[in-house]
Length: 435
Ligand code: GDP
Ligand code: MG
Image 1 (cartoon, rainbow, N blue to C red):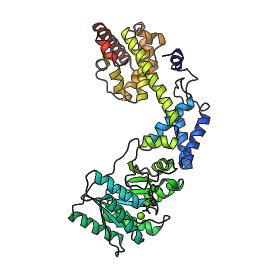
Image 2: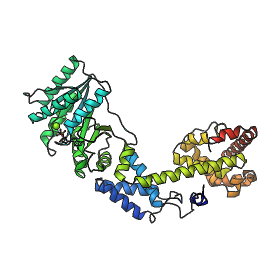
Image 3: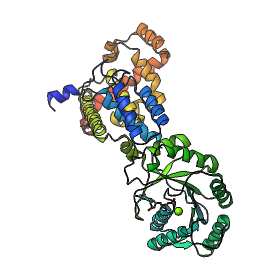
Image 4: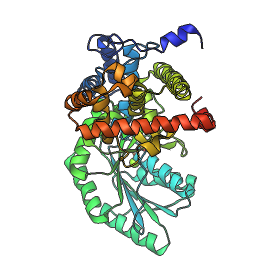
């Protein structure tokens, strides 16, 4: 590595952390990006405030700016806010019933066809049901789609009772071995009582394993109000975001998830029957934020930094110089990774030395408190800690002298173990994973 890069990897103390001032303009920029992506105004403000609050004080690698780090943190937070992981559709019951709800033109019928295709490809026997009783053309539309994907469509053009049609469809499914019944329903141009009553009646009567609310991502700020109105009445299980092939950056995903607290399960990206995808929060986060370049820059810097750290650490272990400062730094690294088990796998012999300690993040808090109560000299060379210092450390950390003693002993054992491993040469092999 070049000297310049190496220098860049050192964290600047004080200056190198996120403060109100050094991210003020980035906060504005992020908020603007969210609103441009059609995230609801109120949600955009709340979310950026929360994220900033959480990020304040975090250390920044000098290779990046506090603002850049905030963008990366925002990206991760948006992913979490949208559920973190993708959530699958629930197919339960015999047959499983999936009710499709939403405004007219949101893409319900198109999505019904796509979902039938998607589930058929998973090897399921699917039946489509046309319950849009107000527009004769709606039945034909579904029939055309059904034919396209090779799925039977159940319809009763003369019947004007959606519940009865759906129930008949379920009977038909039972007789003909269909395992999943998708019920396409009517929508209105705006939320109205009659539509809500009908869809609520359908839900009560059919007890679907999934009620999916379909919403056009291009409707922007309105999407939240519509979602809320439907959810208040229907308590749906999942959201389908359509027309993401257009200009929309998909901010509705964030607003809806936040306001109705229901997972987005599918996205629809075109008129073709194959244009359906499961919803992945991380992909949507970077689409909404639209700052992919910055995010990958930060990720690269963080990865390079971690590598440098690991190399430095392995060198110290090999030279029997591993001290409490290194240990503390490792704790910090692991906190960043969010998993204590990773720490143990990184340090040879640690598993044994830490025997009896529960491996969760909180169990390391007392240890951290004790180490932080030591002076720098003590962290580097714990052997200089005498009885009166132990008392001071105990008071400073709020832990018992016994605990201080235990930690010192365990740390000593660990260092001995590292030494032995180094002598045997096994350490090198074990450590080579770090290089
Ligand atoms: P419904 O009234 O809710 O049943 O909506 P439709 O399924 O009839 O869709 C309304 C219009 O939107 C139709 O012209 C569809 O072809 C179109 N549409 C539906 N989904 C998508 C999509 O994901 N992308 C695009 N570009 N158009 C879509
Ligand atoms: Mg329709």
